[in-house]
Amino acid sequence: MSERQSRLRVVDALLHRPPMSRSELGELLGLSRATVTALVGELELAGMISQRPEEARGMLGRPPLRVSLAADAAFAVGIDLGHRHVRAAVCDLAGGAVHLRSATVAVDHAPADVLDVAAELTRAVLRRADVPAERVLGAGVGLAAPIDAAGGRVHPAGRLERWADVDVADELVRRLALPVQLDNDANAGALGEYLFGAGRGVEHLAYVRLSAGVGLGLILDGTLYRGGSGIAGELGHVIADRDGALCRCGGRGCLELIASPVAVAELLERSRGEPVSVGRLLELVRAGDRGACRAVADAGTVVGETLATAVTLLDPQRVIIGGELAQAGEVLLAPIRAAVARRTLAPATTIVASELGERAEVLGAAATQLARAPHALVSRLAELEPAAAVA
Image (cartoon, rainbow, N blue to C red):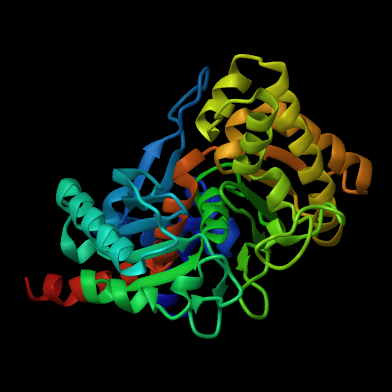
């Protein structure tokens, strides 16, 4: 194995796992203690790895060192294009949002204007974060629509019809002069939770995004799964009520019509006879309002019943519930768990709330570029070595 390959394996292992000791790293990679020590030493000297004592109470003697990537060794921009918002953040290798800005925008109808806003927010967060330009790997974009894997464009059958002919990545490359990668927002959320949140260290997980749309992101064997054409995980358009209302997709009774926070808020609005926004719905749930709690719990039951098929087929270790409706907490989670338990034979699957909240998609979008960090860092180290030899 070449020195470059060994370095690459070390950096890649540290990117995808919590801090570990050198002996754990060596065991994971099948490398000798001496080799790991040498590799960690040179990467630390180059500012790419940090070693810190393990925090342990009551431990006698010197605590072991835990090895992790230096958070400031590389950065990426994450851009989250929801149906009603644009967010941009500069993220470091530890998943920290160095700086984040957002704007309320009607994303569905004016792609060029929305991309202008996204570019301006990106420039603003880069200026504010003041990170070295050579350490910015690029920008990842999570868009609330299915993405065609072959062409990297919005799938024509998706919700954002006016975006179908827009090459989002190319348009943002032109505006930002950075590499850009586009993905579905639920995929971005799954990646964010896998690397930095409730899914860290879990190789098989499902991320359910309950927002203006309902989506499912899948990490299988530690890899983001997009399906043959890139539209795997469109959970919102699985039929939940065969006699239900007509959906924009042409189907009837789709889950999105029942369990999106907008749909639940509209249901409560009709019940109360007064305007109820998603924000107001969540306020009422937190206050213990019986009608609001019942509406959310009923939605949770339908989500669990629909999700149960995916759990049975894919057997994820963990299901993570994100999006705006996840802010309802156990009022939502408990009925999801109960419905999945009734309809599956998967006792090992745990169902938890997102740890990252509204940051899941923007951090996951950035992570599509941070995934390039191992190659970028090892290449940077190779460039430094001739200069060090000359000196």
